[in-house]
Image (cartoon, rainbow, N blue to C red; front, side):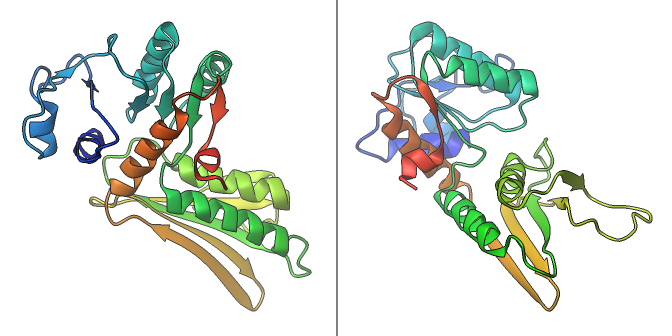
Length: 251
């Protein structure tokens, strides 16, 4: 994701890259970020978190690193776009608390299409709520073999949207053995990890006699990078607060 952010931002005349950050142990530290992103030398060496002239920071990393980036942004009063998933409860509380002091866009997915599908999922849940035969909701997500958290933060967000409308109280991650008949208060999650899949989500509404499936799939990672850059541009100048992609997209 860092490489795609560098490549796309460097090609956008409205943006200027002033820093590219990596872990302190990364073997590419000190090397040109543009060269590794496939766009030629930009005179921008990969560095660790530190003060820069940035108007806004974008974080696509892992939870511990994201918290460190947000802490840095708080110290220097920088807006930050958090595109990392897999936070624990304490880390989530830290982000929410920090958003009272600096502006933060935090979303489980930066993809505009995913966020639109979330709105469609809410609409479908509202319409299907109370169907006489009941509605079984299953969420299937696919990602690349290197993804560390499961189910994805996006899948969990889809489940949260459904549960807020339809009232399910049980969230089941996969099934095995003989679990018995499916309870109506359950949302099932199924996480597939295969190859280089950049991300795919299907929300299944199963009824007696018919089924609705809402699906969104990325063919590459550019949708996430473009969404994050759009969020970064939107966030500059905003007051402190916790924002989402719905705010960015005006949904």
